Image (cartoon, rainbow, N blue to C red; front, side, top):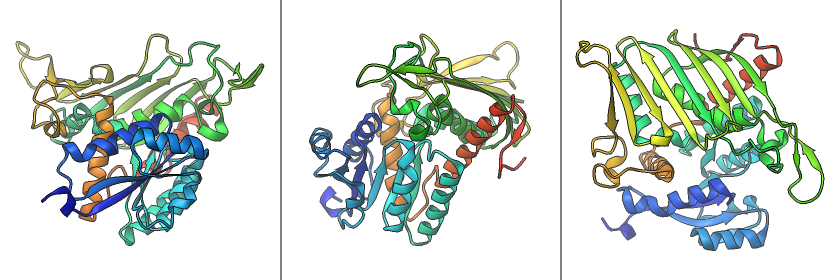
Length: 387
Protein backbone atom coordinates (compact mmCIF):
# COMPACT_ATOMS: atom_id res chain seq x y z
CA UNK A 1 0.00 0.00 0.00
CA UNK A 2 1.43 3.39 -0.95
CA UNK A 3 1.15 6.49 1.22
CA UNK A 4 -1.45 7.94 -1.14
CA UNK A 5 -3.69 4.89 -0.68
CA UNK A 6 -3.97 5.34 3.06
CA UNK A 7 -6.52 7.37 4.93
CA UNK A 8 -5.12 10.65 6.18
CA UNK A 9 -5.29 12.06 9.71
CA UNK A 10 -5.23 15.85 9.74
CA UNK A 11 -3.19 17.21 12.66
CA UNK A 12 -3.43 20.70 14.16
CA UNK A 13 -0.98 22.00 16.76
CA UNK A 14 -1.82 24.60 19.41
CA UNK A 15 1.33 26.30 20.71
CA UNK A 16 4.74 26.47 19.07
CA UNK A 17 7.36 26.97 21.80
CA UNK A 18 9.59 24.20 23.21
CA UNK A 19 6.97 21.43 23.28
CA UNK A 20 5.43 22.64 20.04
CA UNK A 21 8.77 22.21 18.31
CA UNK A 22 9.24 18.73 19.78
CA UNK A 23 5.76 17.64 18.69
CA UNK A 24 6.20 19.17 15.23
CA UNK A 25 9.36 17.14 14.73
CA UNK A 26 7.51 14.00 15.79
CA UNK A 27 4.64 14.56 13.37
CA UNK A 28 7.05 15.31 10.50
CA UNK A 29 9.14 12.16 11.05
CA UNK A 30 6.73 9.48 12.30
CA UNK A 31 5.49 8.29 8.92
CA UNK A 32 9.03 7.80 7.66
CA UNK A 33 9.92 5.28 10.37
CA UNK A 34 6.71 3.56 11.44
CA UNK A 35 4.41 1.46 9.29
CA UNK A 36 1.27 3.39 10.14
CA UNK A 37 -2.24 2.42 9.05
CA UNK A 38 -3.15 6.09 8.56
CA UNK A 39 -0.98 8.93 7.26
CA UNK A 40 -0.73 11.94 9.61
CA UNK A 41 -0.73 15.29 7.81
CA UNK A 42 0.34 18.50 9.65
CA UNK A 43 -2.36 20.86 8.37
CA UNK A 44 -2.50 23.80 10.80
CA UNK A 45 -0.71 25.55 13.65
CA UNK A 46 -2.44 27.89 16.10
CA UNK A 47 -0.79 30.69 18.07
CA UNK A 48 -1.98 33.90 19.74
CA UNK A 49 0.11 36.16 17.48
CA UNK A 50 -0.75 35.77 13.79
CA UNK A 51 2.70 36.77 12.57
CA UNK A 52 4.58 34.51 14.95
CA UNK A 53 2.21 31.63 14.22
CA UNK A 54 2.74 32.01 10.46
CA UNK A 55 6.51 32.08 10.90
CA UNK A 56 6.43 29.03 13.15
CA UNK A 57 4.17 27.14 10.75
CA UNK A 58 6.60 27.70 7.91
CA UNK A 59 9.61 26.73 9.96
CA UNK A 60 8.08 23.68 11.63
CA UNK A 61 6.34 22.18 8.60
CA UNK A 62 2.67 23.09 9.06
CA UNK A 63 0.61 23.86 5.97
CA UNK A 64 -1.27 26.82 7.46
CA UNK A 65 -1.65 28.90 10.63
CA UNK A 66 -4.40 30.60 12.61
CA UNK A 67 -4.35 33.14 15.44
CA UNK A 68 -7.06 31.45 17.54
CA UNK A 69 -7.34 27.73 18.31
CA UNK A 70 -11.13 27.99 18.13
CA UNK A 71 -10.82 28.40 14.37
CA UNK A 72 -9.64 24.78 14.21
CA UNK A 73 -12.83 23.29 15.64
CA UNK A 74 -14.97 23.56 12.50
CA UNK A 75 -12.28 22.66 9.97
CA UNK A 76 -13.01 19.46 8.10
CA UNK A 77 -9.31 18.89 7.43
CA UNK A 78 -8.49 18.78 11.16
CA UNK A 79 -9.01 15.38 12.80
CA UNK A 80 -6.72 15.71 15.83
CA UNK A 81 -5.71 18.67 17.97
CA UNK A 82 -2.33 18.51 19.71
CA UNK A 83 -2.19 20.83 22.76
CA UNK A 84 1.24 22.25 23.65
CA UNK A 85 0.20 25.37 25.57
CA UNK A 86 0.70 26.30 29.24
CA UNK A 87 -1.47 24.33 31.66
CA UNK A 88 -4.04 27.04 32.30
CA UNK A 89 -5.55 26.52 28.83
CA UNK A 90 -5.46 22.71 28.59
CA UNK A 91 -8.95 22.04 29.94
CA UNK A 92 -10.72 24.63 27.80
CA UNK A 93 -9.02 23.55 24.57
CA UNK A 94 -9.24 19.81 25.17
CA UNK A 95 -12.92 19.79 26.17
CA UNK A 96 -13.91 22.00 23.23
CA UNK A 97 -11.91 19.84 20.82
CA UNK A 98 -13.46 16.60 22.10
CA UNK A 99 -16.95 18.10 21.93
CA UNK A 100 -16.21 19.07 18.31
CA UNK A 101 -15.30 15.47 17.49
CA UNK A 102 -11.53 16.00 17.32
CA UNK A 103 -9.09 13.50 18.77
CA UNK A 104 -6.79 15.12 21.35
CA UNK A 105 -3.17 14.81 22.42
CA UNK A 106 -2.53 16.99 25.48
CA UNK A 107 0.85 17.72 27.01
CA UNK A 108 1.50 17.02 30.69
CA UNK A 109 0.62 17.86 33.35
CA UNK A 110 -2.88 17.40 31.99
CA UNK A 111 -4.34 20.34 33.90
CA UNK A 112 -3.63 22.85 36.66
CA UNK A 113 -6.20 21.50 39.12
CA UNK A 114 -7.98 18.27 39.96
CA UNK A 115 -11.33 19.85 39.03
CA UNK A 116 -10.04 20.69 35.54
CA UNK A 117 -8.59 17.20 35.13
CA UNK A 118 -11.85 15.61 36.26
CA UNK A 119 -13.77 17.66 33.69
CA UNK A 120 -11.30 16.62 30.98
CA UNK A 121 -11.50 12.94 31.93
CA UNK A 122 -15.31 13.08 31.89
CA UNK A 123 -15.29 14.73 28.46
CA UNK A 124 -12.86 12.10 27.18
CA UNK A 125 -15.03 9.27 28.47
CA UNK A 126 -18.09 10.73 26.75
CA UNK A 127 -16.16 11.33 23.52
CA UNK A 128 -14.82 7.77 23.46
CA UNK A 129 -18.38 6.49 23.09
CA UNK A 130 -18.46 8.41 19.79
CA UNK A 131 -15.08 7.04 18.70
CA UNK A 132 -13.15 10.18 19.61
CA UNK A 133 -9.84 9.36 21.31
CA UNK A 134 -7.58 11.24 23.73
CA UNK A 135 -4.12 10.81 25.21
CA UNK A 136 -1.80 12.62 27.64
CA UNK A 137 1.76 13.31 26.48
CA UNK A 138 3.86 11.52 29.10
CA UNK A 139 6.59 10.97 26.53
CA UNK A 140 9.00 9.11 28.80
CA UNK A 141 6.72 6.09 28.64
CA UNK A 142 8.03 5.76 25.08
CA UNK A 143 11.72 5.65 26.00
CA UNK A 144 12.63 2.06 25.03
CA UNK A 145 14.51 1.34 28.27
CA UNK A 146 11.57 2.41 30.45
CA UNK A 147 9.14 0.45 28.28
CA UNK A 148 11.42 -2.58 28.67
CA UNK A 149 11.49 -2.03 32.44
CA UNK A 150 7.69 -2.13 32.50
CA UNK A 151 7.71 -5.38 30.52
CA UNK A 152 10.22 -6.99 32.91
CA UNK A 153 8.15 -5.97 35.94
CA UNK A 154 4.98 -7.32 34.31
CA UNK A 155 6.78 -10.60 33.62
CA UNK A 156 7.60 -10.91 37.32
CA UNK A 157 11.36 -10.66 36.77
CA UNK A 158 11.93 -8.53 39.89
CA UNK A 159 9.10 -10.01 41.95
CA UNK A 160 7.00 -7.95 44.35
CA UNK A 161 8.11 -4.32 44.46
CA UNK A 162 9.40 -3.21 47.83
CA UNK A 163 10.89 0.19 47.11
CA UNK A 164 11.01 2.75 44.29
CA UNK A 165 13.32 5.76 44.07
CA UNK A 166 12.24 8.40 41.53
CA UNK A 167 14.32 11.54 40.98
CA UNK A 168 14.15 14.35 38.41
CA UNK A 169 16.71 17.13 38.80
CA UNK A 170 17.40 20.22 36.67
CA UNK A 171 19.36 23.42 37.30
CA UNK A 172 17.96 26.01 34.90
CA UNK A 173 16.59 28.06 37.81
CA UNK A 174 19.61 27.73 40.09
CA UNK A 175 20.76 31.24 39.13
CA UNK A 176 18.71 33.84 41.08
CA UNK A 177 19.13 36.15 38.09
CA UNK A 178 17.21 33.83 35.75
CA UNK A 179 14.20 35.87 34.58
CA UNK A 180 10.59 35.37 35.49
CA UNK A 181 8.54 33.30 33.03
CA UNK A 182 5.09 31.75 32.82
CA UNK A 183 6.50 28.55 34.35
CA UNK A 184 6.99 30.51 37.60
CA UNK A 185 3.42 31.83 37.69
CA UNK A 186 0.98 29.56 39.49
CA UNK A 187 -1.96 30.94 37.50
CA UNK A 188 -0.36 29.78 34.25
CA UNK A 189 1.63 26.72 35.28
CA UNK A 190 -0.37 25.35 38.21
CA UNK A 191 2.80 24.47 40.14
CA UNK A 192 6.57 24.57 39.68
CA UNK A 193 9.03 21.68 39.73
CA UNK A 194 6.24 19.52 41.16
CA UNK A 195 3.97 19.67 38.12
CA UNK A 196 6.60 20.37 35.49
CA UNK A 197 8.95 17.46 36.15
CA UNK A 198 7.48 15.79 39.25
CA UNK A 199 4.50 14.75 37.13
CA UNK A 200 6.87 12.77 34.92
CA UNK A 201 8.33 10.68 37.74
CA UNK A 202 4.91 10.07 39.26
CA UNK A 203 3.64 8.77 35.94
CA UNK A 204 6.86 6.82 35.24
CA UNK A 205 6.57 5.12 38.63
CA UNK A 206 2.93 4.16 38.12
CA UNK A 207 3.60 3.10 34.52
CA UNK A 208 6.62 0.88 35.19
CA UNK A 209 5.29 -0.68 38.40
CA UNK A 210 1.70 -1.05 37.23
CA UNK A 211 0.71 0.21 40.68
CA UNK A 212 -0.82 3.43 42.02
CA UNK A 213 0.56 5.89 44.55
CA UNK A 214 -1.98 5.73 47.38
CA UNK A 215 -0.68 8.36 49.81
CA UNK A 216 2.12 10.91 50.31
CA UNK A 217 3.99 12.96 52.88
CA UNK A 218 5.56 16.01 51.28
CA UNK A 219 7.74 19.09 51.49
CA UNK A 220 7.81 21.96 48.96
CA UNK A 221 10.12 24.97 48.92
CA UNK A 222 10.72 28.11 46.88
CA UNK A 223 14.31 29.23 47.36
CA UNK A 224 14.20 32.27 45.06
CA UNK A 225 10.99 34.16 45.78
CA UNK A 226 11.53 37.04 43.32
CA UNK A 227 13.13 37.13 39.88
CA UNK A 228 13.92 39.84 37.31
CA UNK A 229 11.11 40.76 34.96
CA UNK A 230 11.93 39.63 31.40
CA UNK A 231 10.82 42.80 29.62
CA UNK A 232 11.86 45.64 31.87
CA UNK A 233 13.31 46.78 35.18
CA UNK A 234 12.17 45.41 38.50
CA UNK A 235 11.31 42.01 39.91
CA UNK A 236 8.20 39.86 40.12
CA UNK A 237 7.06 37.26 42.62
CA UNK A 238 7.67 33.56 42.05
CA UNK A 239 4.45 31.82 43.03
CA UNK A 240 5.41 28.16 42.49
CA UNK A 241 7.82 25.71 44.10
CA UNK A 242 11.48 25.33 43.16
CA UNK A 243 11.72 21.83 44.60
CA UNK A 244 9.48 19.02 45.84
CA UNK A 245 10.37 16.08 48.07
CA UNK A 246 7.84 13.45 49.10
CA UNK A 247 7.44 9.90 50.33
CA UNK A 248 4.74 7.63 49.00
CA UNK A 249 3.06 4.27 49.47
CA UNK A 250 2.29 2.06 46.46
CA UNK A 251 -0.89 0.06 46.06
CA UNK A 252 1.11 -3.18 46.23
CA UNK A 253 2.42 -2.21 49.65
CA UNK A 254 5.87 -0.96 48.62
CA UNK A 255 7.49 2.34 49.55
CA UNK A 256 8.48 5.13 47.19
CA UNK A 257 10.52 8.32 47.41
CA UNK A 258 10.30 11.21 44.95
CA UNK A 259 12.52 14.25 44.36
CA UNK A 260 11.93 17.01 41.81
CA UNK A 261 14.07 20.15 41.61
CA UNK A 262 14.80 22.88 39.09
CA UNK A 263 17.62 24.32 41.23
CA UNK A 264 19.91 21.26 41.47
CA UNK A 265 23.22 22.70 40.27
CA UNK A 266 24.97 20.63 37.62
CA UNK A 267 21.89 18.57 36.76
CA UNK A 268 20.48 19.36 33.33
CA UNK A 269 17.83 16.71 32.82
CA UNK A 270 18.57 13.97 35.33
CA UNK A 271 15.59 11.63 35.55
CA UNK A 272 16.44 8.47 37.48
CA UNK A 273 14.25 5.54 38.44
CA UNK A 274 15.22 2.55 40.56
CA UNK A 275 12.97 -0.35 41.52
CA UNK A 276 13.88 -2.91 44.15
CA UNK A 277 11.85 -6.11 44.27
CA UNK A 278 11.90 -9.46 46.00
CA UNK A 279 13.59 -11.17 43.01
CA UNK A 280 15.71 -8.36 41.61
CA UNK A 281 16.14 -4.68 40.81
CA UNK A 282 16.05 -2.30 37.84
CA UNK A 283 17.73 1.09 37.42
CA UNK A 284 17.35 3.72 34.69
CA UNK A 285 19.06 7.08 34.12
CA UNK A 286 17.84 9.41 31.37
CA UNK A 287 21.37 10.75 30.94
CA UNK A 288 22.20 7.24 29.66
CA UNK A 289 18.80 6.69 28.14
CA UNK A 290 19.62 3.68 25.95
CA UNK A 291 20.67 1.62 28.98
CA UNK A 292 18.74 -0.34 31.60
CA UNK A 293 20.50 -1.92 34.56
CA UNK A 294 19.05 -5.23 35.76
CA UNK A 295 19.94 -7.34 38.80
CA UNK A 296 18.57 -10.88 38.97
CA UNK A 297 18.61 -11.75 42.66
CA UNK A 298 17.69 -15.38 41.94
CA UNK A 299 21.18 -16.01 40.57
CA UNK A 300 23.92 -17.41 42.77
CA UNK A 301 26.45 -15.05 44.37
CA UNK A 302 29.18 -15.93 41.87
CA UNK A 303 27.30 -14.30 38.99
CA UNK A 304 24.68 -12.12 40.67
CA UNK A 305 24.97 -8.36 40.27
CA UNK A 306 23.73 -5.51 38.12
CA UNK A 307 24.24 -5.96 34.40
CA UNK A 308 23.90 -3.34 31.68
CA UNK A 309 21.33 -3.94 28.95
CA UNK A 310 21.90 -1.84 25.84
CA UNK A 311 18.29 -1.28 24.77
CA UNK A 312 18.79 -1.01 21.01
CA UNK A 313 17.90 -4.48 19.73
CA UNK A 314 15.00 -4.95 17.28
CA UNK A 315 13.26 -7.02 19.95
CA UNK A 316 13.23 -4.09 22.37
CA UNK A 317 10.23 -1.72 22.49
CA UNK A 318 10.14 0.78 19.60
CA UNK A 319 13.78 0.31 18.53
CA UNK A 320 13.01 -1.93 15.58
CA UNK A 321 11.48 1.05 13.78
CA UNK A 322 14.72 3.03 13.99
CA UNK A 323 18.42 2.26 13.57
CA UNK A 324 20.58 -0.89 13.58
CA UNK A 325 21.42 -2.39 16.98
CA UNK A 326 23.83 -0.26 18.99
CA UNK A 327 22.73 3.01 17.37
CA UNK A 328 21.02 4.76 20.25
CA UNK A 329 17.90 6.90 20.32
CA UNK A 330 17.57 10.38 21.82
CA UNK A 331 15.11 12.62 23.64
CA UNK A 332 13.18 13.50 20.49
CA UNK A 333 12.50 9.88 19.53
CA UNK A 334 10.19 9.42 22.50
CA UNK A 335 7.77 11.96 21.01
CA UNK A 336 7.81 10.19 17.64
CA UNK A 337 7.16 6.84 19.33
CA UNK A 338 4.33 8.53 21.24
CA UNK A 339 2.49 9.84 18.20
CA UNK A 340 3.00 6.53 16.40
CA UNK A 341 1.17 4.75 19.21
CA UNK A 342 -1.56 7.38 19.10
CA UNK A 343 -2.17 7.03 15.34
CA UNK A 344 -2.19 3.23 15.58
CA UNK A 345 -4.75 3.32 18.41
CA UNK A 346 -7.03 5.79 16.61
CA UNK A 347 -6.95 3.72 13.41
CA UNK A 348 -7.77 0.58 15.40
CA UNK A 349 -10.67 2.27 17.21
CA UNK A 350 -8.98 1.77 20.58
CA UNK A 351 -8.33 4.13 23.48
CA UNK A 352 -4.64 5.07 23.61
CA UNK A 353 -2.52 5.13 26.73
CA UNK A 354 -1.86 7.12 28.86
CA UNK A 355 -5.51 8.14 28.93
CA UNK A 356 -7.04 11.25 30.42
CA UNK A 357 -7.99 9.00 33.35
CA UNK A 358 -4.26 8.30 33.80
CA UNK A 359 -3.59 12.04 33.64
CA UNK A 360 -6.23 12.60 36.31
CA UNK A 361 -4.56 10.00 38.53
CA UNK A 362 -1.27 11.92 38.32
CA UNK A 363 -3.09 15.21 38.99
CA UNK A 364 -4.55 13.75 42.18
CA UNK A 365 -1.08 12.84 43.40
CA UNK A 366 0.17 16.36 42.62
CA UNK A 367 -2.74 17.81 44.57
CA UNK A 368 -2.12 15.53 47.55
CA UNK A 369 1.54 16.58 47.62
CA UNK A 370 0.52 20.23 47.84
CA UNK A 371 -2.08 19.49 50.55
CA UNK A 372 0.49 17.55 52.57
CA UNK A 373 3.21 20.18 52.21
CA UNK A 374 0.82 22.90 53.34
CA UNK A 375 0.14 20.92 56.52
CA UNK A 376 3.74 20.23 57.65
CA UNK A 377 4.01 16.99 55.70
CA UNK A 378 0.87 15.35 57.07
CA UNK A 379 0.21 11.94 55.50
CA UNK A 380 -2.37 12.53 52.78
CA UNK A 381 -4.29 9.77 51.00
CA UNK A 382 -4.77 9.97 47.24
CA UNK A 383 -8.41 10.31 46.27
CA UNK A 384 -9.56 7.39 44.14
CA UNK A 385 -6.39 5.32 44.58
CA UNK A 386 -6.97 1.76 45.74
CA UNK A 387 -4.75 0.74 48.71
